[in-house]
Image 1 (tube, rainbow, N blue to C red):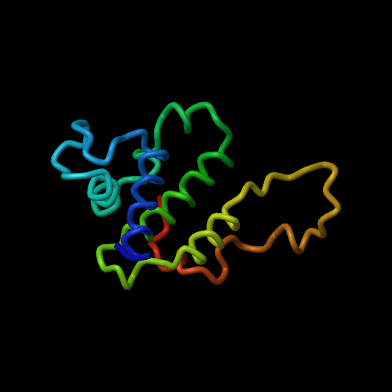
Image 2 (cartoon, rainbow, N blue to C red; image 1 turned 90 degrees about the horizontal axis):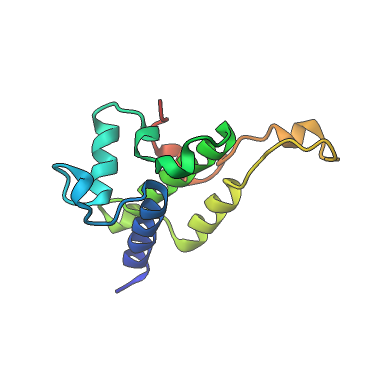
Length: 132
């Protein structure tokens, strides 16, 4: 075992949390595992929002769903087929920190320019195709 296989396992855990599915869930249809199931949804031009656990995503504000999709994209990076394409744990931590809620607060003293900074400006998550 090395860091890249640990990263893959971490990505699988993230997918479990986000989808509510087990790694080898019977409800995955023709897919062999949760990683392949999520990837197949993206390949079939289906919205990745469909894979999110309804009990977590439903009824929550759009910010929660947006944050879940950001973490889902990180999980997909972690589960890249080739180990060399997986991020380091340091990169994963950075991406997760950047995915933290950016909700507006009436008590915030943060300048508007800082609030408008894009998420993941320098991280490898930008290489993923945008979700629908």
